[in-house]
Image 1: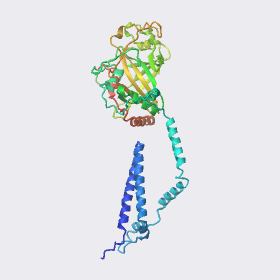
Image 2: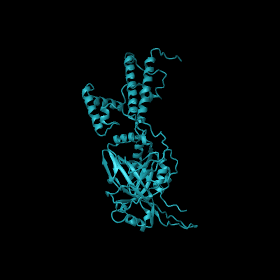
Image 3: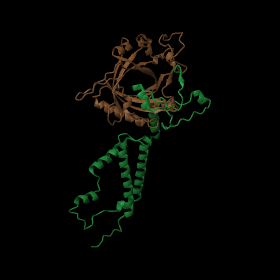
Image 4: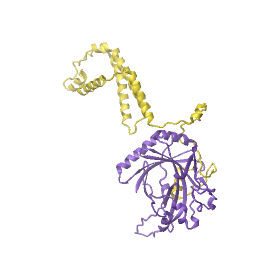
Length: 203
Length: 261
Protein backbone atom coordinates (compact mmCIF):
# COMPACT_ATOMS: atom_id res chain seq x y z
CA UNK A 1 0.00 0.00 0.00
CA UNK A 2 1.23 3.44 -0.83
CA UNK A 3 2.33 5.46 2.17
CA UNK A 4 0.42 8.73 2.54
CA UNK A 5 2.04 12.00 1.62
CA UNK A 6 2.76 13.83 4.84
CA UNK A 7 4.85 16.64 3.39
CA UNK A 8 1.94 19.06 3.74
CA UNK A 9 1.43 18.32 7.43
CA UNK A 10 2.74 21.27 9.54
CA UNK A 11 4.71 18.96 11.81
CA UNK A 12 6.87 21.69 13.25
CA UNK A 13 3.97 23.89 14.33
CA UNK A 14 1.99 20.99 15.77
CA UNK A 15 4.98 19.62 17.62
CA UNK A 16 5.71 23.00 19.20
CA UNK A 17 2.09 23.34 20.27
CA UNK A 18 2.05 19.85 21.70
CA UNK A 19 5.10 20.64 23.80
CA UNK A 20 3.58 23.86 25.18
CA UNK A 21 0.27 22.15 25.93
CA UNK A 22 2.02 19.34 27.78
CA UNK A 23 3.80 21.90 29.93
CA UNK A 24 0.56 23.74 30.74
CA UNK A 25 -1.25 20.48 31.56
CA UNK A 26 1.59 19.46 33.82
CA UNK A 27 1.66 22.81 35.64
CA UNK A 28 -2.10 22.87 36.06
CA UNK A 29 -2.01 19.38 37.52
CA UNK A 30 0.71 20.39 39.93
CA UNK A 31 -1.14 23.51 41.06
CA UNK A 32 -4.31 21.51 41.57
CA UNK A 33 -2.44 18.94 43.64
CA UNK A 34 -0.97 21.71 45.79
CA UNK A 35 -4.39 23.23 46.40
CA UNK A 36 -5.79 19.87 47.45
CA UNK A 37 -3.13 19.29 50.09
CA UNK A 38 -4.41 19.25 53.70
CA UNK A 39 -2.27 22.23 54.60
CA UNK A 40 -2.06 24.92 51.96
CA UNK A 41 1.51 25.50 50.74
CA UNK A 42 3.07 28.85 51.55
CA UNK A 43 1.87 31.85 49.54
CA UNK A 44 5.24 32.41 47.87
CA UNK A 45 5.32 28.84 46.56
CA UNK A 46 1.72 29.10 45.26
CA UNK A 47 2.53 32.44 43.69
CA UNK A 48 5.62 31.13 41.93
CA UNK A 49 3.68 28.12 40.67
CA UNK A 50 1.07 30.50 39.30
CA UNK A 51 3.69 32.66 37.63
CA UNK A 52 5.16 29.59 35.93
CA UNK A 53 1.69 28.75 34.64
CA UNK A 54 1.20 32.28 33.30
CA UNK A 55 4.55 32.22 31.54
CA UNK A 56 3.67 28.93 29.90
CA UNK A 57 0.28 30.29 28.81
CA UNK A 58 1.98 33.32 27.25
CA UNK A 59 4.41 31.07 25.43
CA UNK A 60 1.50 28.92 24.23
CA UNK A 61 -0.41 31.89 22.85
CA UNK A 62 2.76 33.21 21.17
CA UNK A 63 3.28 29.86 19.46
CA UNK A 64 -0.35 29.83 18.38
CA UNK A 65 -0.17 33.30 16.85
CA UNK A 66 3.17 32.51 15.20
CA UNK A 67 1.68 29.58 13.35
CA UNK A 68 -1.83 30.99 13.05
CA UNK A 69 -1.66 31.32 9.24
CA UNK A 70 -0.71 27.76 8.54
CA UNK A 71 -2.99 26.37 11.22
CA UNK A 72 -6.00 28.23 9.86
CA UNK A 73 -5.31 27.03 6.34
CA UNK A 74 -4.67 23.43 7.21
CA UNK A 75 -7.58 21.06 6.94
CA UNK A 76 -7.48 17.73 8.69
CA UNK A 77 -9.16 14.69 7.12
CA UNK A 78 -8.92 10.95 7.64
CA UNK A 79 -6.94 8.79 5.24
CA UNK A 80 -8.94 6.36 3.12
CA UNK A 81 -7.52 3.40 4.97
CA UNK A 82 -8.61 4.70 8.40
CA UNK A 83 -11.09 2.25 9.94
CA UNK A 84 -13.76 4.92 10.15
CA UNK A 85 -16.53 2.46 10.82
CA UNK A 86 -15.02 0.87 13.92
CA UNK A 87 -13.24 3.95 15.23
CA UNK A 88 -16.04 6.40 14.63
CA UNK A 89 -15.97 7.78 18.13
CA UNK A 90 -12.27 8.55 18.02
CA UNK A 91 -12.63 10.09 14.59
CA UNK A 92 -15.39 12.49 15.60
CA UNK A 93 -13.42 13.51 18.68
CA UNK A 94 -10.31 14.19 16.65
CA UNK A 95 -12.06 16.10 13.90
CA UNK A 96 -14.44 18.03 16.06
CA UNK A 97 -14.03 21.78 15.52
CA UNK A 98 -16.65 23.05 17.90
CA UNK A 99 -15.62 22.94 21.57
CA UNK A 100 -17.37 20.41 23.78
CA UNK A 101 -20.55 21.81 25.41
CA UNK A 102 -18.93 22.00 28.85
CA UNK A 103 -15.81 23.64 27.43
CA UNK A 104 -18.01 26.12 25.60
CA UNK A 105 -19.71 26.90 28.88
CA UNK A 106 -16.30 27.56 30.51
CA UNK A 107 -15.31 29.85 27.68
CA UNK A 108 -18.56 31.81 27.83
CA UNK A 109 -18.30 32.00 31.58
CA UNK A 110 -14.78 33.37 31.28
CA UNK A 111 -15.94 35.98 28.78
CA UNK A 112 -18.75 37.05 31.05
CA UNK A 113 -16.45 37.36 34.04
CA UNK A 114 -13.98 39.37 32.02
CA UNK A 115 -16.67 41.88 30.97
CA UNK A 116 -16.78 43.78 34.22
CA UNK A 117 -13.03 43.92 34.76
CA UNK A 118 -11.10 46.90 33.53
CA UNK A 119 -7.52 45.78 33.75
CA UNK A 120 -6.38 49.24 32.76
CA UNK A 121 -7.69 50.82 35.92
CA UNK A 122 -4.29 50.34 37.47
CA UNK A 123 -4.67 53.19 39.87
CA UNK A 124 -7.91 51.89 41.34
CA UNK A 125 -6.41 48.48 41.70
CA UNK A 126 -3.34 49.82 43.49
CA UNK A 127 -5.36 51.81 45.98
CA UNK A 128 -7.58 48.79 46.58
CA UNK A 129 -4.52 46.63 47.22
CA UNK A 130 -3.04 49.23 49.56
CA UNK A 131 -6.29 49.30 51.51
CA UNK A 132 -6.34 45.53 51.87
CA UNK A 133 -2.76 45.52 53.07
CA UNK A 134 -3.61 48.23 55.61
CA UNK A 135 -6.58 46.22 56.86
CA UNK A 136 -4.50 43.10 57.30
CA UNK A 137 -1.73 45.05 58.99
CA UNK A 138 -4.17 46.64 61.45
CA UNK A 139 -5.18 43.18 62.62
CA UNK A 140 -1.73 42.56 64.04
CA UNK A 141 0.53 44.31 66.45
CA UNK A 142 3.96 45.16 65.21
CA UNK A 143 7.01 45.79 67.29
CA UNK A 144 10.65 46.24 66.58
CA UNK A 145 13.52 45.06 68.64
CA UNK A 146 14.66 48.59 69.47
CA UNK A 147 13.00 51.47 71.26
CA UNK A 148 12.12 54.65 69.38
CA UNK A 149 14.91 56.46 71.17
CA UNK A 150 17.44 53.83 70.14
CA UNK A 151 16.25 54.17 66.58
CA UNK A 152 16.45 57.97 66.77
CA UNK A 153 19.98 57.70 68.10
CA UNK A 154 20.80 55.52 65.17
CA UNK A 155 21.55 52.46 67.24
CA UNK A 156 21.68 49.29 65.23
CA UNK A 157 19.37 46.63 66.55
CA UNK A 158 20.87 43.38 67.65
CA UNK A 159 20.83 40.70 65.06
CA UNK A 160 17.90 38.37 65.60
CA UNK A 161 17.93 35.41 63.33
CA UNK A 162 15.52 32.59 62.85
CA UNK A 163 17.45 29.82 64.42
CA UNK A 164 15.10 27.06 65.41
CA UNK A 165 16.06 25.42 68.67
CA UNK A 166 19.29 24.20 67.13
CA UNK A 167 21.24 26.02 69.76
CA UNK A 168 22.02 23.55 72.52
CA UNK A 169 21.82 25.46 75.76
CA UNK A 170 22.55 22.36 77.80
CA UNK A 171 19.13 22.65 79.38
CA UNK A 172 17.01 19.98 81.00
CA UNK A 173 14.80 18.14 78.48
CA UNK A 174 11.08 18.93 78.55
CA UNK A 175 10.31 15.38 79.71
CA UNK A 176 12.41 15.84 82.83
CA UNK A 177 10.83 19.19 83.69
CA UNK A 178 7.38 17.64 83.31
CA UNK A 179 8.48 14.74 85.51
CA UNK A 180 9.43 17.24 88.17
CA UNK A 181 6.07 19.00 87.89
CA UNK A 182 3.98 15.83 87.82
CA UNK A 183 5.98 13.48 90.01
CA UNK A 184 8.30 15.66 92.04
CA UNK A 185 11.31 13.85 90.67
CA UNK A 186 14.16 16.32 90.46
CA UNK A 187 16.24 16.07 87.31
CA UNK A 188 19.73 14.77 87.97
CA UNK A 189 22.26 17.54 88.12
CA UNK A 190 24.02 17.64 84.80
CA UNK A 191 23.74 21.33 84.25
CA UNK A 192 26.50 23.14 82.48
CA UNK A 193 25.70 26.55 83.89
CA UNK A 194 25.48 26.77 87.67
CA UNK A 195 22.04 27.83 88.88
CA UNK A 196 21.67 31.53 89.33
CA UNK A 197 20.22 32.58 92.68
CA UNK A 198 16.89 34.10 91.96
CA UNK A 199 15.92 36.56 94.58
CA UNK A 200 12.52 38.22 94.72
CA UNK A 201 11.90 37.19 91.11
CA UNK A 202 12.99 40.39 89.51
CA UNK A 203 12.58 40.51 85.79
CA UNK B 1 -13.57 16.54 83.57
CA UNK B 2 -12.01 18.17 80.57
CA UNK B 3 -9.85 16.64 77.90
CA UNK B 4 -6.69 18.60 77.26
CA UNK B 5 -4.78 18.28 74.00
CA UNK B 6 -1.27 19.63 74.10
CA UNK B 7 2.11 19.89 72.42
CA UNK B 8 5.42 20.92 73.94
CA UNK B 9 8.68 22.53 73.02
CA UNK B 10 11.58 24.34 74.60
CA UNK B 11 13.51 27.49 73.91
CA UNK B 12 16.94 28.82 74.86
CA UNK B 13 16.77 32.02 76.89
CA UNK B 14 18.48 33.97 74.09
CA UNK B 15 15.59 33.23 71.73
CA UNK B 16 12.81 34.28 74.07
CA UNK B 17 12.61 37.92 73.01
CA UNK B 18 12.37 37.14 69.34
CA UNK B 19 9.83 34.34 69.81
CA UNK B 20 7.66 36.52 72.04
CA UNK B 21 7.68 39.34 69.49
CA UNK B 22 6.74 36.94 66.74
CA UNK B 23 3.97 35.34 68.78
CA UNK B 24 2.63 38.78 69.69
CA UNK B 25 2.35 39.56 65.98
CA UNK B 26 0.77 36.18 65.17
CA UNK B 27 -1.68 36.24 68.06
CA UNK B 28 -2.44 39.94 67.87
CA UNK B 29 -2.17 40.40 71.63
CA UNK B 30 0.38 41.24 74.25
CA UNK B 31 1.34 38.31 76.45
CA UNK B 32 -0.24 37.93 79.86
CA UNK B 33 2.08 37.20 82.73
CA UNK B 34 2.01 33.84 84.43
CA UNK B 35 3.12 33.47 87.99
CA UNK B 36 1.82 30.47 89.83
CA UNK B 37 2.60 28.59 92.97
CA UNK B 38 1.80 24.88 92.92
CA UNK B 39 1.66 22.44 95.80
CA UNK B 40 1.52 18.73 95.15
CA UNK B 41 -0.12 16.41 97.66
CA UNK B 42 0.22 12.67 97.92
CA UNK B 43 -1.65 10.09 100.00
CA UNK B 44 -0.34 9.89 103.53
CA UNK B 45 -0.97 6.16 103.66
CA UNK B 46 -0.94 4.88 100.11
CA UNK B 47 -3.29 2.04 99.43
CA UNK B 48 -1.39 -1.15 98.63
CA UNK B 49 -3.70 -3.65 96.96
CA UNK B 50 -3.02 -7.29 97.65
CA UNK B 51 -2.14 -8.95 94.39
CA UNK B 52 -3.73 -12.32 94.11
CA UNK B 53 -4.87 -14.49 91.27
CA UNK B 54 -8.34 -13.85 89.96
CA UNK B 55 -8.63 -10.52 91.72
CA UNK B 56 -8.65 -7.43 89.61
CA UNK B 57 -7.34 -4.36 91.31
CA UNK B 58 -7.89 -1.28 89.27
CA UNK B 59 -7.64 1.14 92.14
CA UNK B 60 -5.17 3.88 91.41
CA UNK B 61 -4.27 6.82 93.56
CA UNK B 62 -3.19 10.11 92.12
CA UNK B 63 -1.30 13.09 93.36
CA UNK B 64 -3.32 16.27 93.79
CA UNK B 65 -1.97 19.57 92.53
CA UNK B 66 -3.07 22.82 94.10
CA UNK B 67 -2.29 25.94 92.16
CA UNK B 68 -2.53 29.54 93.18
CA UNK B 69 -2.21 32.52 90.88
CA UNK B 70 0.27 35.05 92.21
CA UNK B 71 -0.22 37.52 89.40
CA UNK B 72 -2.07 40.07 91.49
CA UNK B 73 0.95 40.19 93.79
CA UNK B 74 3.10 41.56 91.02
CA UNK B 75 3.64 45.26 90.79
CA UNK B 76 4.69 46.70 87.48
CA UNK B 77 6.83 49.76 87.65
CA UNK B 78 8.90 51.18 84.85
CA UNK B 79 8.62 47.97 82.92
CA UNK B 80 10.27 45.95 85.68
CA UNK B 81 8.18 43.36 87.44
CA UNK B 82 8.66 43.16 91.15
CA UNK B 83 6.89 40.94 93.57
CA UNK B 84 5.32 42.45 96.58
CA UNK B 85 6.88 41.41 99.83
CA UNK B 86 5.92 37.98 100.98
CA UNK B 87 4.27 37.03 97.73
CA UNK B 88 6.44 34.00 97.31
CA UNK B 89 5.85 31.96 100.39
CA UNK B 90 7.14 28.50 100.75
CA UNK B 91 4.87 25.83 102.09
CA UNK B 92 6.03 25.10 105.59
CA UNK B 93 5.19 21.46 106.06
CA UNK B 94 7.36 21.08 109.12
CA UNK B 95 5.34 23.38 111.29
CA UNK B 96 2.57 20.87 111.68
CA UNK B 97 -0.16 23.44 111.85
CA UNK B 98 0.05 24.53 108.25
CA UNK B 99 -3.67 24.74 108.14
CA UNK B 100 -3.26 28.00 109.97
CA UNK B 101 -0.81 29.25 107.38
CA UNK B 102 -1.37 32.53 105.57
CA UNK B 103 -1.03 30.56 102.36
CA UNK B 104 -4.30 28.83 103.11
CA UNK B 105 -6.14 32.10 102.75
CA UNK B 106 -5.18 32.46 99.11
CA UNK B 107 -7.40 31.41 96.24
CA UNK B 108 -6.40 27.86 95.37
CA UNK B 109 -7.52 25.61 92.58
CA UNK B 110 -7.32 21.82 92.70
CA UNK B 111 -6.29 19.75 89.71
CA UNK B 112 -5.97 16.01 89.19
CA UNK B 113 -4.20 14.84 86.08
CA UNK B 114 -5.00 11.51 84.45
CA UNK B 115 -2.29 9.65 82.55
CA UNK B 116 -2.36 10.67 78.87
CA UNK B 117 -4.15 8.41 76.41
CA UNK B 118 -1.94 5.60 75.24
CA UNK B 119 -1.12 4.78 71.66
CA UNK B 120 0.49 6.57 68.77
CA UNK B 121 -0.99 10.04 68.67
CA UNK B 122 -0.33 13.38 67.11
CA UNK B 123 -0.87 15.31 70.32
CA UNK B 124 -0.89 14.56 74.04
CA UNK B 125 -4.47 13.85 75.11
CA UNK B 126 -5.05 13.98 78.84
CA UNK B 127 -8.11 14.01 81.07
CA UNK B 128 -7.98 16.68 83.75
CA UNK B 129 -10.29 17.30 86.69
CA UNK B 130 -10.31 20.86 87.93
CA UNK B 131 -12.07 22.71 90.70
CA UNK B 132 -11.72 26.09 92.36
CA UNK B 133 -11.85 26.17 96.12
CA UNK B 134 -14.54 28.63 96.95
CA UNK B 135 -14.74 28.31 100.69
CA UNK B 136 -12.84 26.70 103.50
CA UNK B 137 -9.27 25.76 104.18
CA UNK B 138 -7.76 23.83 101.25
CA UNK B 139 -4.91 22.35 103.27
CA UNK B 140 -7.21 21.09 105.97
CA UNK B 141 -9.38 19.55 103.27
CA UNK B 142 -6.43 17.76 101.72
CA UNK B 143 -5.28 16.54 105.08
CA UNK B 144 -8.71 15.18 105.97
CA UNK B 145 -8.79 13.49 102.59
CA UNK B 146 -5.72 11.58 103.72
CA UNK B 147 -3.20 13.51 101.69
CA UNK B 148 -0.06 15.22 102.82
CA UNK B 149 2.15 17.81 101.24
CA UNK B 150 4.84 16.33 99.00
CA UNK B 151 6.56 19.13 97.11
CA UNK B 152 6.04 22.54 95.60
CA UNK B 153 7.16 24.56 92.62
CA UNK B 154 6.59 27.93 91.03
CA UNK B 155 5.89 28.69 87.39
CA UNK B 156 6.68 32.02 85.79
CA UNK B 157 6.30 33.09 82.20
CA UNK B 158 3.92 34.32 79.55
CA UNK B 159 0.59 33.31 78.13
CA UNK B 160 -0.84 34.05 74.68
CA UNK B 161 -4.01 33.00 72.95
CA UNK B 162 -4.11 31.86 69.36
CA UNK B 163 -7.54 30.85 68.11
CA UNK B 164 -8.76 28.23 70.57
CA UNK B 165 -5.27 27.40 71.71
CA UNK B 166 -3.39 28.75 74.69
CA UNK B 167 0.36 29.15 74.41
CA UNK B 168 2.27 29.09 77.67
CA UNK B 169 5.97 29.91 77.77
CA UNK B 170 7.30 29.33 81.24
CA UNK B 171 10.11 28.27 83.51
CA UNK B 172 9.86 26.22 86.66
CA UNK B 173 11.38 27.45 89.91
CA UNK B 174 12.02 25.54 93.07
CA UNK B 175 12.94 26.55 96.54
CA UNK B 176 16.57 27.47 96.86
CA UNK B 177 18.53 24.95 98.90
CA UNK B 178 19.21 26.22 102.37
CA UNK B 179 16.30 28.64 102.35
CA UNK B 180 14.24 26.28 104.47
CA UNK B 181 15.10 27.99 107.69
CA UNK B 182 13.42 31.27 106.84
CA UNK B 183 10.39 31.67 109.04
CA UNK B 184 8.17 32.75 106.25
CA UNK B 185 4.81 31.81 107.55
CA UNK B 186 4.64 34.32 110.32
CA UNK B 187 5.23 37.21 107.96
CA UNK B 188 2.32 39.34 106.95
CA UNK B 189 1.58 39.69 103.29
CA UNK B 190 2.52 43.23 102.30
CA UNK B 191 3.66 43.90 105.83
CA UNK B 192 6.03 46.83 106.07
CA UNK B 193 8.60 45.05 108.22
CA UNK B 194 9.13 42.16 105.87
CA UNK B 195 12.53 42.12 104.31
CA UNK B 196 13.30 38.47 103.93
CA UNK B 197 11.98 36.80 100.79
CA UNK B 198 11.66 33.16 100.07
CA UNK B 199 14.48 32.54 97.70
CA UNK B 200 13.78 30.61 94.57
CA UNK B 201 16.03 29.21 91.94
CA UNK B 202 15.41 27.96 88.45
CA UNK B 203 14.93 24.22 88.19
CA UNK B 204 16.93 24.42 84.99
CA UNK B 205 20.12 26.37 85.45
CA UNK B 206 20.49 26.89 81.72
CA UNK B 207 17.50 29.29 81.87
CA UNK B 208 15.72 27.30 79.21
CA UNK B 209 12.00 28.01 78.66
CA UNK B 210 9.30 25.40 78.25
CA UNK B 211 6.53 25.97 75.73
CA UNK B 212 3.16 24.33 76.10
CA UNK B 213 0.42 24.82 73.51
CA UNK B 214 -2.92 23.37 74.50
CA UNK B 215 -6.62 23.29 73.76
CA UNK B 216 -9.20 22.14 76.28
CA UNK B 217 -12.13 20.14 74.98
CA UNK B 218 -15.03 19.91 77.40
CA UNK B 219 -15.83 16.24 76.86
CA UNK B 220 -13.74 13.21 75.91
CA UNK B 221 -16.81 11.99 74.02
CA UNK B 222 -16.82 15.08 71.82
CA UNK B 223 -14.96 13.34 69.01
CA UNK B 224 -15.60 16.13 66.56
CA UNK B 225 -14.22 18.68 68.99
CA UNK B 226 -11.16 16.55 69.69
CA UNK B 227 -10.55 16.13 66.00
CA UNK B 228 -10.89 19.86 65.36
CA UNK B 229 -8.57 20.70 68.27
CA UNK B 230 -5.98 18.21 67.03
CA UNK B 231 -5.89 19.72 63.57
CA UNK B 232 -5.76 23.23 65.03
CA UNK B 233 -2.73 22.26 67.12
CA UNK B 234 -1.12 20.74 64.05
CA UNK B 235 -1.74 23.94 62.13
CA UNK B 236 -0.03 25.93 64.87
CA UNK B 237 2.84 23.48 64.77
CA UNK B 238 3.30 24.28 61.07
CA UNK B 239 2.87 28.00 61.67
CA UNK B 240 5.56 28.25 64.32
CA UNK B 241 7.90 25.99 62.44
CA UNK B 242 11.29 27.65 62.44
CA UNK B 243 10.62 29.39 65.73
CA UNK B 244 10.34 26.27 67.81
CA UNK B 245 9.41 22.70 67.14
CA UNK B 246 6.36 21.38 68.93
CA UNK B 247 6.42 17.71 69.84
CA UNK B 248 5.13 15.10 72.26
CA UNK B 249 7.06 14.37 75.43
CA UNK B 250 7.27 10.83 76.77
CA UNK B 251 3.81 9.90 78.05
CA UNK B 252 5.09 8.62 81.37
CA UNK B 253 6.29 12.13 82.26
CA UNK B 254 2.67 13.07 82.98
CA UNK B 255 2.02 10.16 85.32
CA UNK B 256 0.90 11.39 88.73
CA UNK B 257 -0.20 7.98 89.97
CA UNK B 258 1.23 6.75 93.19
CA UNK B 259 3.69 3.94 92.62
CA UNK B 260 3.93 1.43 95.38
CA UNK B 261 4.30 -1.85 93.61
